[in-house]
Amino acid sequence: MPIVESLRLGDMAKGEPVPESVYHVRIAKAELKTAAASDKNPDPYPYLSVALVITGDSPEEFHGRQVFTFCTLEPGKNFSLRQLAVAVFGEDEELDIMEVINEGRFVDGELLAAVGIQKAGKGADGKWYEARNQIKKFLPLKS
Image (cartoon, rainbow, N blue to C red):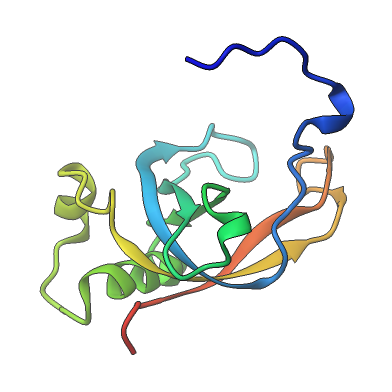
């Protein structure tokens, strides 16, 4: 393990978003979660929380950086989950997505992710958020 003797705050990563682009990514984590119930949504649907690591043909300066997204399982709104599955596994109408999630088969899947930047501002929850990356679209590695 390397010894760290000095670490100036000015030399540390700030967690700024990566530039808008299409990146080659690997799925590092894909966990099924459910949001807390609220007055607006008393019976929330589960969602897939996804962490993607930039790798492959992407510019080397961004290798290892992570971008995050979530995909709802709610009927009629689950198009991003479909995009993710098609990008990783191909267009297979018989693919059981719950089986894929439960068996952890999304993890280590490689694909392309069109990444944008969401500007800083107040979220729907009223909290202030700094600028952050946002996945615009999932694409297969081979078109």
